[in-house]
Image 1 (cartoon, rainbow, N blue to C red):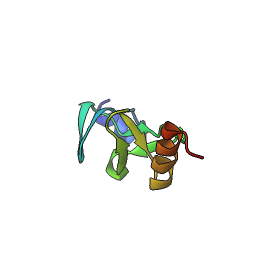
Image 2: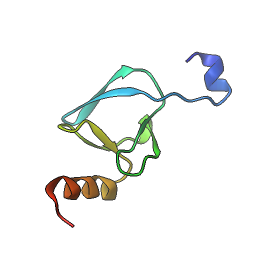
Image 3: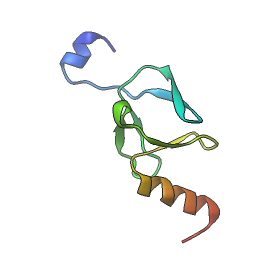
Image 4: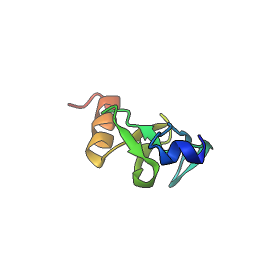
Length: 74
C-alpha cells in the first residue's frame, strides 16, 4: 500500500503476531479480522486477542465467546 491508496480510502489487512500484552506487525496494514464476528478491527482499536490461537477479537464479549467455545461452555 502506498500513500495514494490511503488517500483513496483503500485499506489492507495487516499480518500480526499476537504476544502477551502487545502485538508485532509482520506485514503492514490497517486492520485485522475478528475471529468471532468476521468484522474488521482497525489496529488503533485492537484491544483483545488470544496468544495461543493467534486470534483477534473486536470486543470483550467476542473474546469471551471464543474462550467459552474453546472450553465447550455454553
